Amino acid sequence: MSAASVPQPRAARAAVTPGGRRSLALALLLGALGATVVLLSAGQIWAQGTASVAGGTVPVEADGGTVTGVPTALAIVGLAALVAVFAVRRAGRTLVAGLLALSGAGAALAAFLGASDSAALDAEAARISGDTAAAVAGLTHTAWPYVTAGGALLILLAGLFALRFGKSWPAMGGRYERSGTPRTPRRAAAGDPDRPEDLWKALDRGEDPTHDA
Image 1: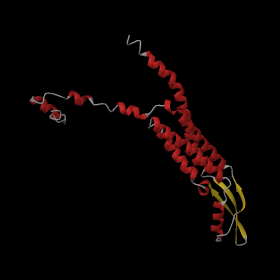
Image 2: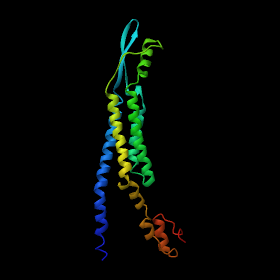
Image 3: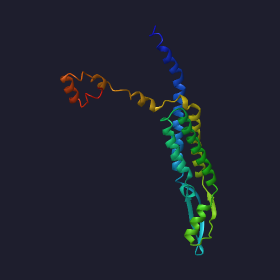
Image 4: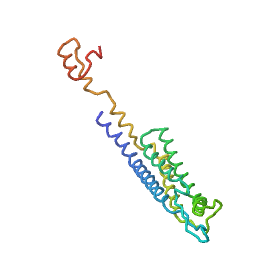
């Protein structure tokens, strides 16, 4: 009778595991891909123009990190949260998943705002010309801020998946907790402390034979 009851929990796990694994794989893919896109595109040229110097003009340009460092910082936070979401459980997993989603949302917002920002180029024009009141001319923006925002939205989706399906994902902590049971050699080593041979055997194993006395 006990053998007949064994397939039941296995069948229940088989019914839950495929969906959990698919959502887990999708969240990992979205989070890792989104963070990679943000980190790479933030290093590209976001804005360019010209600055007047000694009666002429020189080109000036600014990459994403010069315009705003927020997307890069939040992408790193998102990667850390993506890893941490598997190390925690219950309420902790929900909090970390929320942090993952917020990181993506914040990075996307910063990238959108940076797509029309001219402060970085104005500062570069002032530095080149030596005139603190100098402003960049012929300002244009590339598509890289929007690529950055798209990668950030992937991080946001990964966080939403973690919030929705994270309860069915495995936690790495469970395995280590089960492995922390009392070690059998210590239990097997228990002998009669009044017998000299048991005392010497315990000492050879590096144990204190009087510990349980």
